[in-house]
Image (cartoon, rainbow, N blue to C red; front, side, top):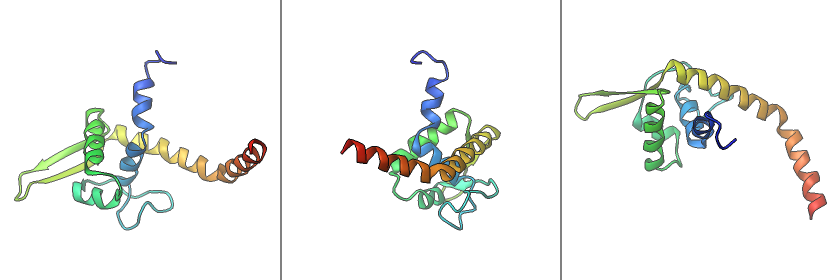
Length: 127
């Protein structure tokens, strides 16, 4: 498994900050990651992402956005206004990742009660 060629990409896309940024870029911004984090994909300014991703440090937001841009999952557009406007948007590749993440979210929601019950059973045997 350590030599698996996809390991580096899987490490990237399983990062919790990547998941949050991808979800944020698909929300309409009117709620904090609503029922299915769905919405129309649209460009989003850095400041808007910052509000949606409250609790994520500026350093982590910037690093995550740069890595997603490098991987071709988002595009970064700079508009030479005063002050400069920077927007981020999911690419087609990023949209395909979002669809997969929605499937994982659905699985988690469907099976959360089972997982919690299994944890309780395990913990009662270990304690």
